[in-house]
Length: 499
Image (cartoon, rainbow, N blue to C red; front, side):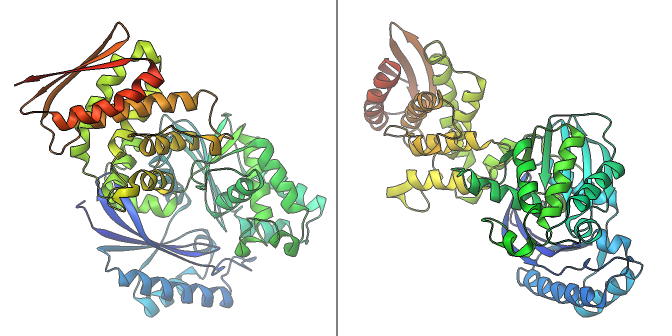
């Protein structure tokens, strides 16, 4: 898929109709350029399976809005899909025909497996999930999937989405203890989980809303929801808190979305029971799901899964922010050489090396915003950018590296709730190495042809071969040498030979 191609996806769900407009960056990355959501509640009041007249009217209005917004981007393709509300409705074809007459959009109803698989692709291409369970809860359906070695090995799709669970099992406001027991029992009766696994990833609006509440309640220092981990105890507490409150009291709980106040408690109870059934100890929030999975189908066609999620998202973030990936590779090579040369001194391992190299690829990311405040902007872009496959702790480390790569003392005090005791020292070491690597590659294009390094007698000896004088590089390395001596207690000796 060529760079810059725009795709639009409209998802007609039981609770909301949502639009995603994405633009390709590389063959393995895209950026979101627009989103829209309409709380149409197409599946509300669907007790006998039929879509209500009111639900249809809301759904058609939502589709009209989405069609107008999508058309404004002139997408190369526009995909419109429907899920549980349309799967179960005997009068679904009436809605589909009216939608086509109103908007000209052809709506395709996904099977339960198709919906699950698209959600799996979206999550697999944006997280570290290789083995474990995945749940996708919407307004109408709940999909629970088993993932084995990054392959979707088992799928269950049941009508236990937030709207249906609330309407069928929790009519009380707040629900009674018996109603809650009936919903928990229904989850156990309708789902089978023959093998337990401690890892559970979750996608869908209700999962993100629970994560938002948890983030506020625990004063989590990272703003992103993608990658946030909720413990088993946290999910159980949230389910109990939400179910004990009436709708008006629920609205006043910090983080509860106004459109979810009447259904979020049902979703929380269902998720709590899924964790019990699967043996999950944590629920990890996945920001991508069905809509992104459909984008990936257009983007990668027959090779849906991205081989290296981290590398793909680093490349995408760099491309989206004006960083030339090829120009960054010499810095990456120099950073790797310096890391290996000093390994016996810093005693860091492969995880730290990988973070160093990722940071080297993003080191210049803030320049196109403001050169004079580039390091602070780089830190912000890493925190707020669309990075996948990294934990929140790793995001903090990456952001710190790009901020302090050329000077200063890293300060992780604001993130003490999620970093480890050794991280401040480790970040200081990696920042020094990245600063040296950037010093070696001070100019673009770089006149440096070769880099080798070794440690001898408490001195880091760096040998550079070049096609011209390296006065600019040597000047920068002199400045970096002070940090090297302060952090690693090593002197710096740089020797240049001409080729």
